[in-house]
Length: 477
Image (cartoon, rainbow, N blue to C red; front, side, top):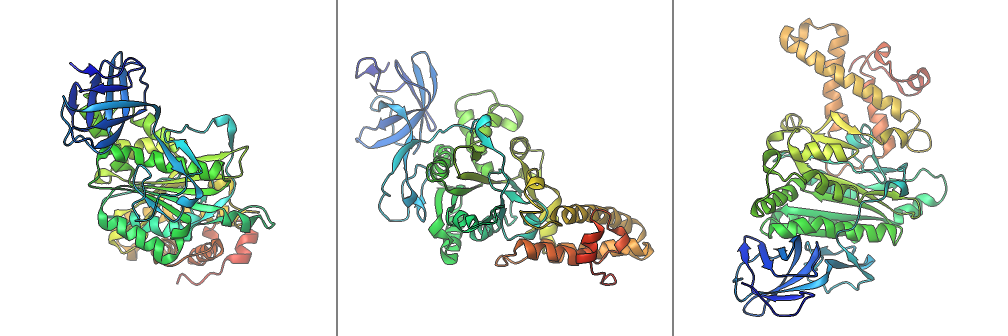
């Protein structure tokens, strides 16, 4: 039985009841709250941190961030600190690399804290939200032209094992710029207030090094704060990492009026850590072994995104997740799709045909795109052009199915034009090098050039004035 070292308040307890994996169970506690920070001291006097996962009468379940290796039941001391986990936040954290608990891992000293913030945060109150209007230019045509990313949006990327989502994420971080809708000097000031918080969860050492080198060599690192949880780090830290990163993002956005792009990779690793801890706690599993609260847990992260009425800053999220067995109905992408405002889907078939980034435009969607493109944002013809490209590429899939049955030579002239359109669309519009940074003007012009492969009478989603201005029929070449 554990012995109480300090009277109730129950702040410090000598000895624990059980140690299971990264979990410590402490009995005879009082005055302890959910998510409270705890300090665990082993027999050698070494200290490690944890937080309270569960409270049941006089029993507390504590998850230990750095694992329980070396702890013994009798000689372990647990001290409850009376407050949740807090991290120092400041603008000096831009250009730096941290672990999941916001400790520097780049060999430089601790940044000077402007304030200490609770990592748990809270979702943005819906009544305080401001509708996103401004556009982020990623420089990638399949996103900018067909699934535009909007300032304050949460737009996940659904990928698969072995697909180049890491390269896509790095390219977006290097190239992303804000296209403000105002026609005055605001565009320059907005860009100066743009920052990126990059979060790696369960990434391998070589992947982490790739991101560091990519941002450093491009000069983007000065505006990027990196939070890295490596594959060999304890899973408990993996659960804290996105919360720490979003805490810094909230400080930069709503206290320093910055526009912050948060890139989270890989959310599947985060969910696997959540499933592992749930299993250790003996909870009843839900779909595919994940805990029943997976949806609310993901929502607690995703809903810390957006714009609020009393701040000129914003948070935009780009979560990246790998779909096990490329299954888009798997619980992680399935629940993510319910919470977020669209998705970018990567295709293994396109990647095997040499199309990079292999963005499959038909299942991809940006639900906020319609109000953030066109006149005053990108270009007046943007919405109509995107709709026409979608319709034409959807027709391509039907024609390809027909050609596989009767042969391409038996197709009508119009259907053969659609086949040529599909090949050129994938090769010139979707595919681009990792260093090619296209403006919205470039993207839309390429779209019209590709569309000009089709006969004019097939263009039913664009206006006659737009066709007269941009369409140049090239004889199906």
